Length: 377
Image 1: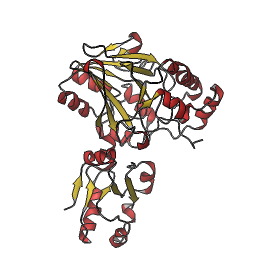
Image 2: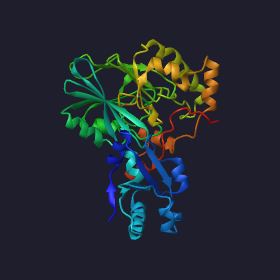
Image 3: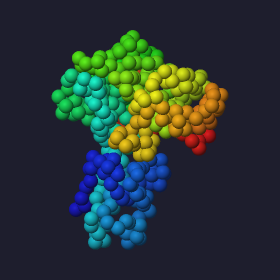
Image 4: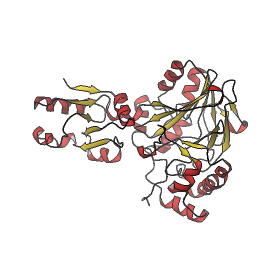
């Protein structure tokens, strides 16, 4: 019987930049839209429906260990059985397939904070989503949690923490937020911008009503700063005067897209003012921690995804414009394909739709598309 590799094992190999060979047996269309990527990942697409001769397939396979990947895992196991019948061994199939890969969340240590606190980044490698935990004096705040909340519950339990605050920096359109569900599970405060949540079907605490959110008994605070552009109510959070949690407004390699509510031309000016005026008030040494990443190249030497604000003003492609008009033209002409089911996801995050768990998984399938990209017109 073929051996299985868990998603956790695969993700940790990729994050450690260990060499990984994959055989992706999904259709070419699905493969081209979304696949496992990484600096040390080598992938061969061999669609199952085109496998008519197992010996011809063997010619495509790498020497040594490899992992077979499909949408879930039944097809991968079928291919594994064919290879075993042909006398091959030393390979794995990915348990749960791409669906499980897209949902796995891995915590990564970012930094110690003043008075003994800590900051962690949660990496959802298969979706390019990032969320955060700020910890101090036995309490924690979770920022921008993904739909599957168990990894956050496990994290705070393992650390012996009480989760007191859950914060969404904006109304998400590319993935379903776990914010409200997580807050209700542990009876924590749930925070969201009143502008983004104006039509929400649930109660929340408006971020505009406060200047800081205390975590524990120490001086660690989250300082909300209204930074519209990606959404009308996008909020940036300054943690301990050292880290800037920018949500989907600013990434390491690009900037947030202003069109996911169908208001690109109205909101692009807000995005410009946020990036080139509001963010200029922060020290260049402040480390930007974004809500998404697009490439493993964004990993820094400290083992997490983030970069100083000063570095981004020099090297981020989205910040190269010499003025407002050039920036507006660049953004509007480089908007890529919108996220799958983005309008329905917005409605789910407002509490207006209640899809089943399987429907939610299907809505989220695919890569992150919340950034402005080069080469798109």
